[in-house]
Image 1 (tube, rainbow, N blue to C red):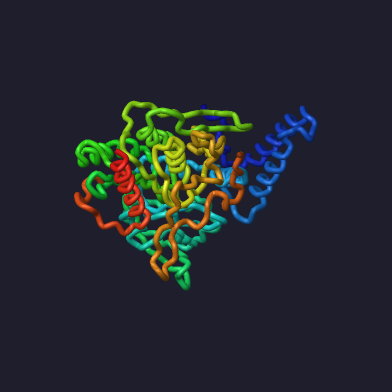
Image 2 (cartoon, helix red, strand yellow):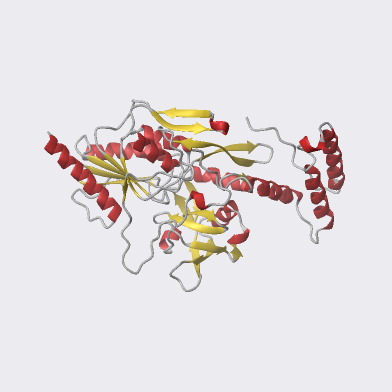
Length: 429
């Protein structure tokens, strides 16, 4: 259950008296313990600062904004993935996981105080404007992103479809920043796409783990199997540039390809196993080889899937090192105002006990993307270990029916490996 919280402070002339009485209460509570053991005496500083700001700051400020700001600052000191969400921010987050919202269709993260593009969604306003992975958004509607938190930045880019937003963007091969004027649209996240690469060889890409992933995966796997005549000869599962999402969806995706065994372990303080998710035989898609494509933009839920399939020998992991985000966040909602706390409470481990945090998943076969001469690589440049305060590691179905022209070097390599596996298996008979 969410923790019990105090009623929202009223914005009135009596707030100074409230703060004073609060200070007396805290002081009385602190007196019950020796000062060096008391967790309360430092709150006296917060109460005093709040009072001084309310009474003496050059402009009137909302007490709600001050308190929210203070809590945000406190949680920000923990790690890059914990955070306090205002009611509006929490509402936005819930809308995103439902797979439909108004915005520009871009995935971003905060690195070293800079708002970095992970990837634009296919067909979105950001994609049509030519935005790329590793672009740096330095301002939104003229306001510098350096002064924003990640949730604030995302909230500013979202809005009613048809409205405009200006993003000021830097790119390594641009001499100076450019202003891109985007018109917001209804962003319907297509979480899963698929096609047949060649007869019998299927391809499925999961872009993020929202609430629709499991259902879409099952529908498209079934369609591919039907198109292959009942059984696939091989499957490429593409998790590149997938930043993660809902934990339970990642477990179900892994379960779709595993008949039994551990999928992921969750360990809390002092190495205590908090949870262990296991695969079930019902509904398993097996009997064909798999290759999972990953890169530096594959994080969190993507790493859970890749790690589980790798440890069980169900798939060959191919590509480049993943991001390394192996921490578990829980959401605690405060019903009285609709705000929420996203708090890191544990770490994820693969079935064999390998830590994901900071290390990520190392591919079985390293395949760098082919970059045309004179062009910069557009994969994310940094990983979890580069984030400040990061936790340390403790130990479409109707595709082409014939051979497809593949200009994606990593995907072409994956298909070649699957075909080679079929050849070797035939020779062994």
